[in-house]
Length: 270
Ligand code: DGL
Image 1 (cartoon, rainbow, N blue to C red):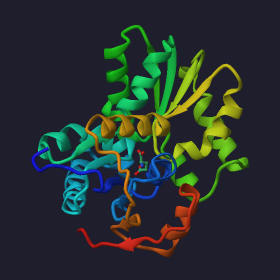
Image 2: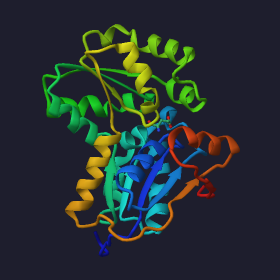
Image 3: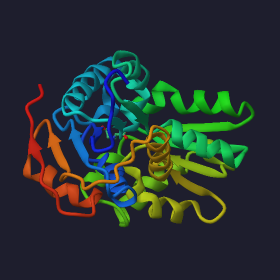
């Protein structure tokens, strides 16, 4: 890093909206001494339907915002943003913070298991980027990967439709796809999808593991901070949660993704 980082600096976490709160929630739970500054780009939600160039542009501006708030680490808590922008961000802000994405930790976790065939579901942007397929092929050349864009799932979850008949029908429609025959695991490559993990596991039945990146990402965050002696062991400041567009509905929806009550502050970044 160009300036000397210190343990007490916050961790910046961002997403296209509020789905990335699943990652913030896990940081709050497993690394409770860390302070979080969260940014949800609700003005541009969903990233899953945007071009890679548009997503990169949004991410550059958000990371600048988080770095101005002195974050020691930036967690890209969005698969669409991780797929489109991780390399660009690392190149654009060299040495200014430790960058974590949600793709690499999940890929590393999957490779450890030595499956023969897996499925991946994600937004259109993530699937189109080919990032999971490419990274998995590099690390485990023989692995068969069936990837499918499932764009109805994120808005469905945000509307609170999970663990019910609507979610069951949508999930069944997507996962009955022939490409998923014989998979041993399904990767939930979207930060919203942990909320439908049970629905999906019920549909797939025993014998197919359902994996999402949250805990793998926490392990990566912890390892990277520990390696640089940057885990906070002091008293932390309160977390801050910003959104680029505020509505009451966004604030109410945060309850689905974050275990504690939180208040969203509107920050006019655009
Ligand atoms: N957070 C996004 C992701 O993980 C899903 C929502 C969106 O499309 O913006 O890909």
